[in-house]
Image (cartoon, rainbow, N blue to C red; front, side, top):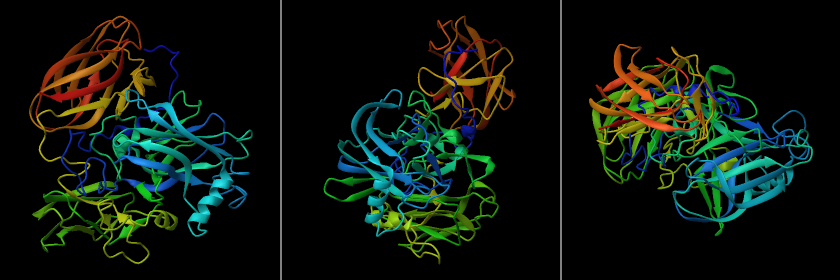
Length: 533
């Protein structure tokens, strides 16, 4: 049950494939030797690029980002397209008329909600004017990135955002498009929702887990994520409705010194890479590689994976399960690597390729080389690809998906709307940000698929709940085969008056379908959190 005065957002249920080793706490390093979501993180699950035409005055696109160092900037680059406008080629496309009036605001992000707060700087410019300026800077090539002129001092590790709108008096006939790579919504990890945890695992590309893209159709009053992140829904392989997709951040900076700094410049457009190799250079910590994996968005398999320490010659191989999605396997022998060494992963089959458009390579020439900023690259590109085009290959155990040892303070929060199956419930906008589950009647239930618990023992389960009159809930694993008990929900005072209630349970290590059942109704659920005691 819920107060209907709270505006419903678009359903965001596709995110719920939490089967991929749900959130372990901070790890010392990931694929390229950086931290969570840092350079070298696997280019997982990204394919195709979609556009969000800003053809109405109430449309807003939000790109949230986190700088890796203190920066003095005068530009922020982001994906921008104008096909169909008079300055590109007229007709149907991603833009129209004179390209619209692009307004870009650099804003602070509220740490509690993750949404735009105070404005830092802004620019308003005609779309075709900026397109032509960007084109001139990339040797008259068609740019896939444009910029906003925004002078600011950015702090490392702080969340910022770009809020992009079209201020043209006739936006329906004069507009531009925000352009972004997309990733499988079920594999998008923290980039598919309003994630505020800087240590969240499953981060993609070279992104911080707090970085994402959101869309609003009410001038920024509410925001949505997932496949509805744009004027139209997006899917992998353009129309693969079995695999909804969400937009991913793509951006860079220009320092006041005139140097361009890439943040996440990679671009994907339904490109596969057959018999490809990716190398990770300038390793920063010693690692023992025991697993390998890669991503495929089609029916072709990724073949046999070989991991090789290019500095010592040690190598090992394995053949993962073949099929759509992220496939991984255990190496026949461990491959140790030391700081400063370089290792590679080769797939004999087909894997997704993260490309750099030629205009991007002109803007960010340092990307795709054995450098501290972007250590992932192709050492010997196959015909038709470039050194900067990086296959989605990975070796671990330290990775966006697999942790080393489960820390003693392991904790994972699951958003209530991230169910893989449900009966009788609906989602609504939550006063604490994002969505909550409501309209819960007696007998209703939600399932959260294949949640992985790192070790056997006692866990505290916290539920963020609201209820006018009080109720009960029960928790189980694998369709009720393991019953973990019930928790009482107090009368909190309203449908959006939130309290946290807890229970202690014993769970054996492993992956389970977690079920929440309603013996009684009339309560709302915002999130569930498991903490190892």
